[in-house]
Image: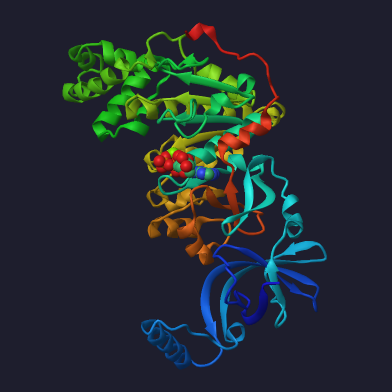
Length: 504
Ligand SMILES: Nc1ncnc2c1ncn2[C@@H]1O[C@H](COP(=O)(O)OP(=O)(O)OP(=O)(O)O)[C@@H](O)[C@H]1O
Ligand SMILES: [Mg+2]
């Protein structure tokens, strides 16, 4: 036993515990209300000092101790255990009655016993029905031997991963990918601008080291990698005017010209814009569009056509095979490291648009659609692409209907429009130092996290809170360390590595 309840109300439960005990913020405790046969779950949100006797007594005692310190004499205190204690302030998470978890609508009886929760107390969490394992339950800083994860059905309802730099976003994504590979039930598209997922880094292994990578991982990269991969190529003919608007900003005149080009030339608009002389273009459109407009657009087109990932051959494009990989429930890693930002974004935008439009088409045939796995598109630094009315915002708003989810990884959720953030149903909240970022998360999370502000501030790397609709409360978790986690899959999936030689 740790202590006993002394107050206070339905939103704040306070208990006394011995001064020598070390309770930590974020710990999960249970209060046993024997009278009503309820088991309350409490999350420690703050800690205070307590003493019997007046405040003056405390000042006086400290003063006396300091005097004795100066004289280098020992001090002793009578009945220390009774006079000194600590106070834990807790947010009630809910309670179990008749084996069912309920919202915190009651309070535990006076002086109910408080103790640390043990493995058996968490049985109700096992009924979560999740299939993508992420980590273990956490109580304060310690791991509890209960696995936690999320239900793959939540994929299309979008996922946000929020953390200050170095708090464990990429490791979490690797763990997510490891679980997705093992499940084979979801298509996961990871755009990797830092080139950190394939090989891993100094400290960690990469996705290629997953024992099931041979048949569950497909890799696309513009440059040579140490293992099997396909070359990332996008055809100039599959880039739309809308795609470019996701990446560059245009004046109204330029936008009009783009639409004119696209309606005149169809999918050849970009190649023609690039190949034709300025004068030719002006003539083509009956001099309605100024040559200055074309010359700005042509510079953009030149930049795109120069890119190593853009190909002039209509038949050399990997987007169709990526769509197929995703349909087969694979993890598709698109390594865009070393590319310019516009190239990385272009690849992401084209792929995201293709996935959404593919699934929209498929939606018409209910039976075929029913068989499609959900696809999750992962974007690092998602605030870059989630602000305008672009394809990612469109997916955030309507993706769930078409089984297309977004996973937004960002250090700065406050830069994402609140309306879009509220479309994200699952949040992985890791350590977030900035108050503005915490506030925006607080207002969009599907569980009340207003009381866990202190905990979010003090989370260490790899520690998280997970919120999603239907979770009993914001679930404290310790994310698996990828290198350790993938050891669980050893011996599974030794099939030969598959790759598409056509792209070498
Ligand atoms: N689950 C974990 N268990 C143990 N250590 C972890 C965990 N997650 C992260 N770390 C530690 O934190 C470091 C940074 O993790 P990671 O690269 O995933 O952070 P990040 O949020 O992606 O950072 P950045 O913003 O720089 O991309 C790791 O190298 C590791 O030392
Ligand atoms: Mg990272």
